[in-house]
Image (cartoon, rainbow, N blue to C red):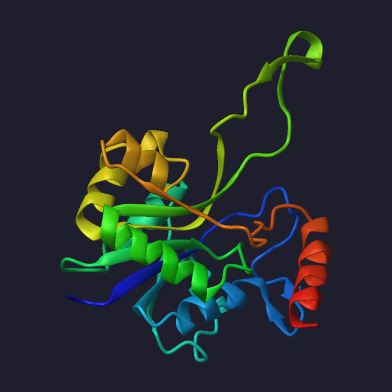
Length: 220
């Protein structure tokens, strides 16, 4: 059986960031390179497809990552970008999809998600929701309390077999906020891989300082 492949999604527009978050420096290297390194170091992954915004392919220096076989332009939505990466791949193999904006995902987490996907058909990193949740109502004030029991905050990597993942994203792309949502819509069960280590997504400028502190603590 072929080794797994990975699609590294780096096609975001960084609208809430105000600048290109993936090329922002995080210690000695830009954000996206931390994510690429975790995929590069994963023994189960033999090939990485990097998906970036159209016209920006030349901004990603992949020389340090020999598993990156190609850089392809993404689409308007996340599902379009992931599909662009999947379309490069062939055969019956597992595929891990990972956000380039989650630079603290570990190789151990990637291997665990792939292991469970191989066993169950699909798997995804997640963590239980621990904060109280409330909806806003009339006038923008807090109103309805949402029961958090059983709720999971989804992360990446998310992994599944190539064929079912491509079919799910093709058929349910309008509902696909992530790969899990498309897979569940298609009827595929997804195994939750609980992750207790920090794996935040860079979204706002202050996130970079938070990540720098986490990296410093991890290497201390």
